[in-house]
Length: 319
Image (cartoon, rainbow, N blue to C red; front, top):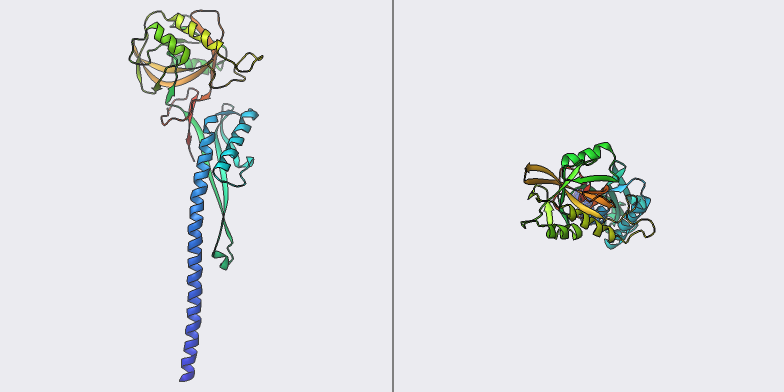
């Protein structure tokens, strides 16, 4: 009887020891998994922050190695700010190629969560990889527009021909080669020529949004575009000796680049804003036209986007 009791005690001790080991192992794993979960969240937050830091540089031409290098360097810079170790150029992937331009960038962030207790069962670390994708999307709002709108049909005609460089746009209907433009009143003022000229030279000191209804500016405003264009052309100080900003090389904040409204007619006196375009001004001797090239530019972050793409972009996290 005593022998049986001793055997039962021994078996109980083994079971208790096994149970304690199991409990400690599960507890250790739970603690380390919890710590790893925190690291996963940190890695995702870092990936998102790095992605948003480079969104302003999209889209980028497929063969523009200088700008792609800039994006990579900015991503590395922000990885350091977000305490990501070992981030490198191969962690940056350009994607969504459209019309010769990359419109998205995916960033990959890797981290290692060192275990404290799970080493008991041979798990010394947990590898973590998180990604974030930022993409250029058509903007629904811009600041600093000129008081000039282009009919959607005229813009689409230019794009459909594929000849969007060195084009001439006429004031009003006229006999323009590729389209026409009209002057718009961007606020609730009377839109006199002096106000319009100031807006053309320096940009409207406010925001315009898709869906906005604006009145057309009546009367002959040819001098507004002529004086405004001449002034803006004189303000370009970039690429000295190379003709200043051109479609081949330009600074997006150069005064030669104007932001115009794309509209549809509501009636003979009002229009609805449906999007925005960027236009690089070029010299022309004609008083009733402007000449230049449509560009694809990023106008910075805004929470308003558009479902129509006219070449001006903001950016969003898409993955």
